[in-house]
Length: 97
Image 1 (cartoon, helix red, strand yellow):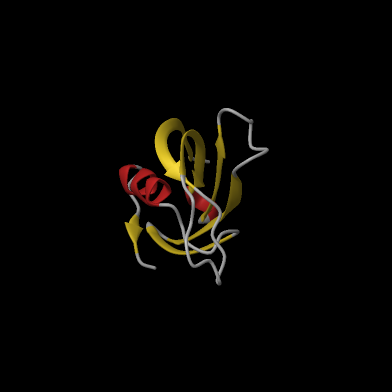
Image 2 (cartoon, rainbow, N blue to C red; image 1 turned 90 degrees about the vertical axis):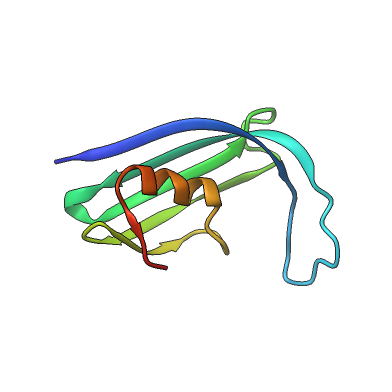
């Protein structure tokens, strides 16, 4: 069974956002990412959190749904982070969201 996994870090501006947030105060943090894809089962996962607090301040996780090599869905967050999308593209996925 082929499982692709990637861990990486990226410095970025993060902040809490809600559906009624008129303004979001963002702060620069180093975010750690863990992304995986089990190709035969057409499923994957992701986890992202800030390095400083180990995820106490900023944390997100969820699942990825594939149809063959196409990423067709995700769950766990409102909007899938662009770094996760770029990562699965590099793993060979076609983005079809």
